[in-house]
Image (cartoon, rainbow, N blue to C red; front, side):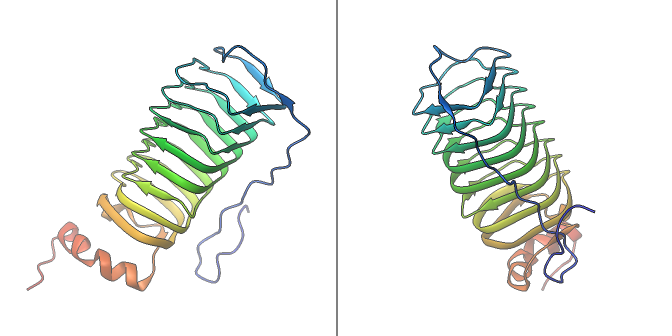
Length: 224
């Protein structure tokens, strides 16, 4: 019924993308276009900063070392694609769709991905500061060996999401819904808001001890 058994804990593991890119043609365009259609292209070290690719579709593409500062990609679709070493501040991915995507060694700050849909996505390595995923839907997503600083999952729906050997600092889970979310692999787990939304997640005994104070405050328990 989708997802592998979760190591005997009852939590279902995320399904990872099986990405096999075909031979790619080099991207030679003058810039992104709204509702553009990009198929089988290699964007190598492209400076896409400030460009408008709203509603664009990227199919079987590789973006390597690209600059994405203030790049507008709302409602864009990334399908069967790999983004490696992309960097930028203020990238707009609101209501975008990422399906069967690998995001590797990214350095992104203030990315706006509210309302986005992520399915079979792996985020491996890199650092994401102030990632806005409010009201987003994440299904079969793996955060692996990366650093997430103050990510906002407010009102988001997370299903079969794994955090593996990564840091999660100042996370906002306000009004989020978690189903089969595995947080045991988080080396540094800090929840700024919404600790009461952890139902549906699995954590380690050590993490439970670290969160005990916040849980007590949330539940109105006096510890004297």
